[in-house]
Image (cartoon, rainbow, N blue to C red; front, side):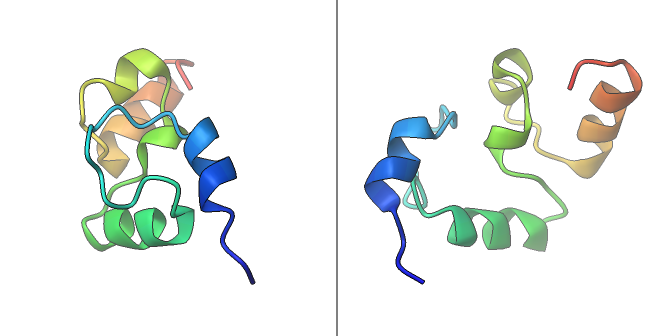
Amino acid sequence: MECKKEQNSAKCTCTYAGCPRNGLCCECIQYHLKSRELPGCCFSPDAERTYDRSFEYFARLVAANKV
């Protein structure tokens, strides 16, 4: 499958400047799952800016109806 990096980058909501995985969704997901995290695109803009990508934080947001 061909990566659509340019299209993905245009839609990427990650605010981490200089991320080498920007637009490379499959690499981003693999990177974060190794650390029991989700990528920034799974979070609201406010939650994403905390850089807490943990499963636990995501679960708290879901329980509070914030995702």
